[in-house]
Length: 166
Image 1 (tube, rainbow, N blue to C red):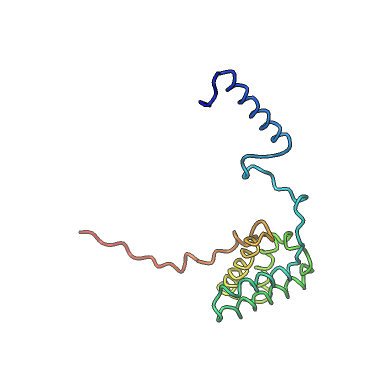
Image 2: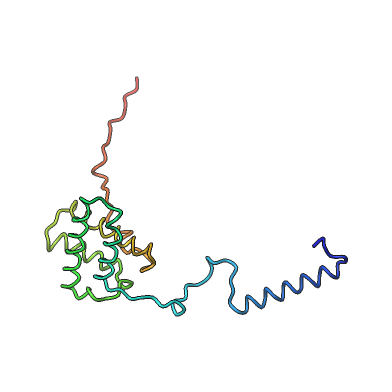
């Protein structure tokens, strides 16, 4: 602003900037990208079935896990796909897989398969990790397993007796 010879020149320049900014705002430009609403119409995305999405996530995850862990992940995906197929969920789009279906799968493992809670927690942890891969890749927006069963239980923590003071 100090480069202008008079206050009038400064005001003319400022008005031109304001008019240009107003024009950009009318065209839909936003200065803060966090406040821009998500527009699904503008971005075409590939639809993935639940089975295909988990297979995709497993292949990506394979390189970052231990060799000994891969069979456990694969077994969990197999159990999940079997459950999804028996409930008609195998071919639905992965974005429609929600927390309620996670609860149904959890119940299936506990009741129908008769697994102990510790085994169920392990399967849920594997699936949570695979769904997180899908979130990171932009396939889904939120991880439906994120708020599911905690992988750690309070019963596993040791409680030490309080120290006596004299």
